[in-house]
Length: 111
Length: 113
Image 1 (tube, each protein chain N blue to C red):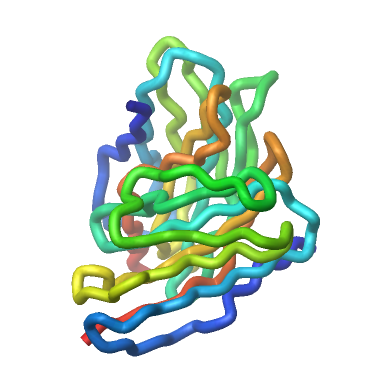
Image 2: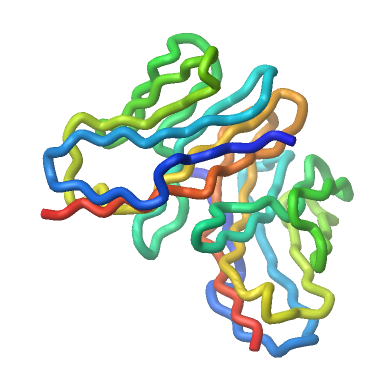
C-alpha cells in the first residue's frame, strides 16, 4: 500500500511564527503536492513538485514556500504564519500520470 | 484556467434512496477524472477514476460514474445509499498538459437512517 505520512496531525502556532509541515512518501513517486482544505472551498493546490528540487506554484501559493531536497520528502513552509492560514493541510503523491494518494492531513491553527 | 464545479453543496437523503452528484469541468483537452470520498475524521480515499475506455466506471462500495465528454461531466451515482455513505465527496480533474489535480468544492452527503 502507498503510504503518505504527514509528521504532525495537530499544530497550534502563533502569528508570525515560521511553520514547517513535513510529508514523506514511500513509493518513489515523482509528483508530490500540498493542498489546503477549507469548508465550502474544497481542496486548493498550494504547490506541487514533479521532481527533486523542482516546484511549481498552484492556485494559492502566496504566503507559502516549499522544499524538495529528496524525492521522498516534500516540505511546506509558512514563513510568517497568519490567522488566515488556519486550515487543514493535505500532502499527496503520485507516480507520473497515475492516481494521487493523500496523507491524513495536518490541522494547523494560528492564534 | 481549468476549473471543476460540483453543483450540490449539501445533500440529505434517506437510506435506500438513489444518489446522483453532479460534476462539471472546464478544459477542452484530454482529462483524467476522479471521485474521492472523505468519511468523518478520515483522510481522502479514491472512490473511482476514469482514464480512458468505457465511460461508465465502477468504483468501490457500489458507486459508479459516467463520463460524458460532450457535456464535460463526470457525475457520481449510487442506486441505494446507506447510512455509512455519509461523507464529503470531491470530484477532481487532472489535465493532460499539467500534473495538477484540480478539485471541486465538495458535496456533503448526509444519509438519514
